[in-house]
Image: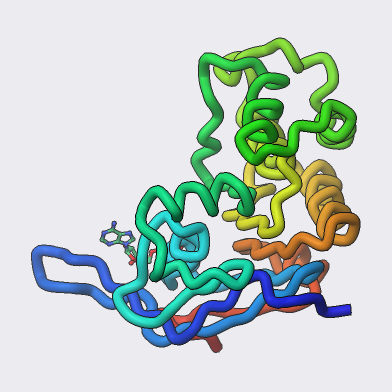
Length: 222
Ligand SMILES: Nc1ncnc2c1ncn2[C@@H]1O[C@H](COP(=O)(O)OP(=O)(O)OP(=O)(O)O)[C@@H](O)[C@H]1O
């Protein structure tokens, strides 16, 4: 069942300044994502997928149009307000894993959950097991392979049980079987907690496992 809207993107436009003048990247993109719903975002390289994800993550602001997260219009918040909203409500998995190098795997997960005010050792233990990270809890990020770091990044995003999960190619560094299992875990969290998932992927097969799919072409949804 579709729950309340977690994310509403309303006719946003975004361009980047370049030496040749502003280059439009998103030109009138709108979408809604409800609690418990998963949405795959596909599109060619350079079509604006990461830009859209950054805007939804409140890491950047659109030039025009509005984004509402859990009923709160982002335009009304200052940078501290945006940071708070991100911390409390959003789990982000980006292509750069953004792990904290001075913290172990276990501490990376716990830190994120504490930041969100929802540290639950049982849940982090369950995540550690489901992501196949047992035995690696005391390692530091630079002692892990790329695929292991990616799984820690996913664990970190899920540790605080966010209402919205934004993921940019979250299984890109994983072999096919591990990637499929990790996506299963993310979809399981969506089902269990009623989170909403917006995931960028180049994989048709992974996209087909999500509830809905949107395709970006030259800055517009097709
Ligand atoms: N900070 C920036 N300054 C100028 N141009 C940028 C900037 N970031 C992105 N772009 C340009 O905006 C366009 C969209 O980039 P974006 O990263 O959103 O695409 P994408 O669909 O995620 O691509 P990929 O699949 O390759 O990751 C590209 O043409 C890119 O070169």
